[in-house]
Image (tube, rainbow, N blue to C red; front, side):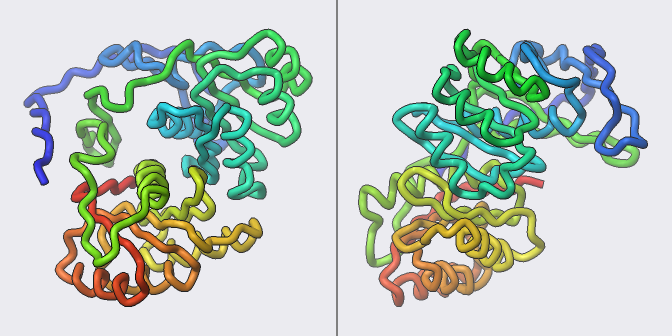
Length: 326
């Protein structure tokens, strides 16, 4: 599977940052913080460049979460909604309209949605706004909102409403930066989901419906902290396990959260951001009711997982692309 050429990083990198606003505090009240505009990538639509039309002052955590939600929802061309809590999606869905997408996303984890961030990739209308004000939210971010929607959102004056005018291009090339003690880590943005068509590795190929859900689930997986496991069905997440030290624990958590939300995983699909070192995730997915799996492949023990999937009559596809997110 041919991988795209990696952009070369410069020997010297001069950053140009301009303080846009001081924030009340950082991740915690004893930390100071400010938002700086990146003059090397100044026009990317998102939380940093959005127009705040109402709500309390934005916090450091608000901006992190709003960015995570908006970057995820930008992956989809169909109407989509993403709900984020602590930078992890807790509900993602596609719909025929933003309203349907939001309602489907909310079902995945209504408990975690409390105090969360909602992003949609279409204009917010009155019907969507009426649903958004039914629950306590910190931030709503979207490309636009009509006058009727803004009037409804104004009934909850503390909700921060961010309008970006447009959507970011998820395929655009740029760099991301993170600081560590004594240095800065720079990398090219993860601007792809698939490098090629997923490769069927089991005796049974996915059905058309399964394949559609597999592609959706793997796209969501890209935005979930590793180790990431995502169950999806009918264009919506039904269980998400994030940020665990072992992949099987993420699989258990995703199953547990689905049960908590009273969602059935029968007929669902499972996506993993990285390969399976053991067949235990396949076995757990089968027990939970999943019928198909998508993962990068590349483990020395891939065949064990393939054999387990064949044993259970499951379909499995390899993408050849990993999406670790730390």
